Length: 146
Image 1 (tube, one colour):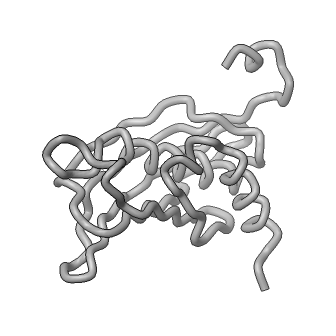
Image 2 (tube, rainbow, N blue to C red):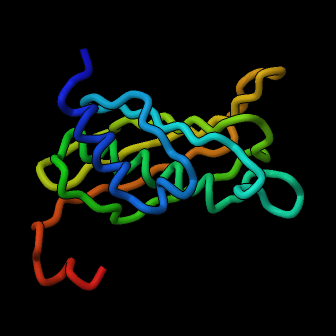
């Protein structure tokens, strides 16, 4: 049986047009952990045939925000994050694993490792990120312009 948080997460991901564009899918989602998957296709590659850094960055940012929301609630935004690109993404799909490092009442520090999966090779860690996720008031004046 699929849990309620997972279903809410799938609904939120489907509501993001950019997530639909890249083909992102929520694989696992519970308190403190998330797994996000993106099938690699030609439209997501840069000129050298590697997954574009923007796609790796999207995967990390979205996984960070989802996992932060798993402990803070649904009204969250990324306050900041840092990503390290470790090796080129060449394979069949990206898998982003997010986890909570620390959570307070209004912010959570989270980390994410992004792997590239290829059928004929071992999984390869291609990026790692850490970020701060914060809560916001839904419909507040300071969030309407974003």
